[in-house]
Image (cartoon, rainbow, N blue to C red; front, side):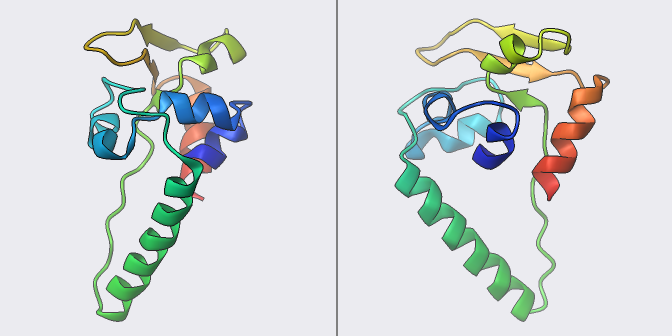
Length: 119
């Protein structure tokens, strides 16, 4: 998602500090905790990207059709400042993590984000 959010004006440092560290990435998918155990190192992101590409290629070689997660609406809270007219709800920091934010699925920016995430 780093490249997707870069396209919306979120710089690498903001993305890395919003992302959970490697041991806590599954919490990011749950959408309620961000910035725990981070920032997420750029080298880790690069290695994960390479590993994911290998896993997908091997799965396809074996005839397995991969099912990948899609954009769910969780965005860096800084998106609310960059897009003040978008329907973004920002939840304050809790449980020792950073703030969380959600882009409403009925907001036009959601469809743009979804398309960019799937490309």
